[in-house]
Length: 284
Length: 281
Picture 1: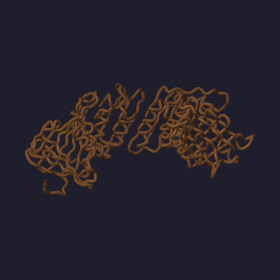
Picture 2 (picture 1 turned 90 degrees about the horizontal axis):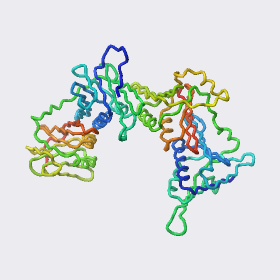
Picture 3 (picture 1 turned 60 degrees about the vertical axis):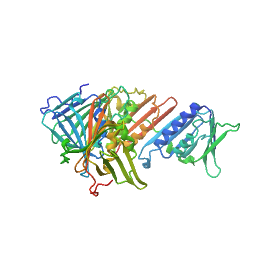
Picture 4 (picture 1 turned 30 degrees about the horizontal axis):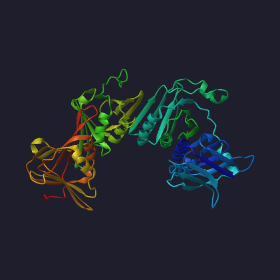
């Protein structure tokens, strides 16, 4: 098992740092899956997470200038690591003006991701700051726990409103209630609602548009015959939604959600070279 | 934009109905008196008064006169209810608190009367939020009986002179002592904290002093924890008037200019700290 990678381009480095910062806001611990062409940050829907799951995918070629990966075995040319993304985020904070960042999987006393940040210096020799981030190697027999979640058989799929507005509204609602209802229909309308003994607040978004899903397979059949005005809804933990929105530092190219009534809300946020899927289960 | 809150065919008109093009005209004033969760709203034809009290010693009032609103109508002589001010503020600022120039949240407020919730409709950029906040029985409010004929000492200061002083008050002191006198030190703020005592003097001929009418030397102490929230009103205001009566009751009146240049007032009344009975200098 070997892994080495290097980033030299500052824009790529900042972009990578932003992705890691977003992941760090969403998960305390997660799985990093390395393949020849991609990196994945995965959180599977355990009770410990409150049933939330996350799948974030990056093409390594868009970020790294050098990338060498040798998996556990030839037929299974992948590496699965368990790590605390906040540690990686903190290491990358020192790299804001770096000349280069090298990441390497090492096993001196225990498995670590060694992040070596080469900083500019006045003398001829560079300064190097090294961070050793402890990781757990996830054995091959557990890899099945981290498969890509399938798009659920949703009732409604709708584009999200402007994230800045959605973020403000959800943050205020978080002060008022622990749970929030998201409802949407196939006419591009979405409502966010909270209701407690003290207050009820509903925010109405219109003209959002509904994404056209290619209906090759039967998975969208429940959406096809649906009355356009009828709302699909789910009540979810408001903190989880707020964390997702707060982690978005840059506006995504595409942002949408799929609602399975009273079951789950599936968020898809697409940036140029990063895709993030986040599943929030409905509360009982 | 006119937001109609009345469902078609409803027989009872709203006892209070008001519209504001910029909800910040209301929310910023309410923040200046937000030191307790609950407030009493009192609406008359003249406008809205929101009162917050604590410990039976301090009362803050925010006045938003009818002219500030684009539409304002009260169907009874007066309308009173108690409401959760924290919830009200969260609703008024549902679209965020930063004031981006050019964008503002439009507000329509309706109240059907005793037992009904306060309804707010807020709109920004085509997005509409509807809030229904439960109301309660109004509390009995303190009456400080503070009128201009009973005023012993009065000064009017430009707020910028006091802002730093109030922001940096030594909070380890239990009291804020205010001395007002026709003679030196004229106007003095004192604290007695863990590190020692601090005195801040304002001379009567200072540029910041707009008016100085002190007839008697008075020294009064007030619980600092009760007065500290007034810093919010001070931060918003351009001028403040400080008055005391014969019993040492304190009245602070803040003149606040909103984004459109209209004037509103916030006042704080405070009882002197009863543990101290003698004047000291």
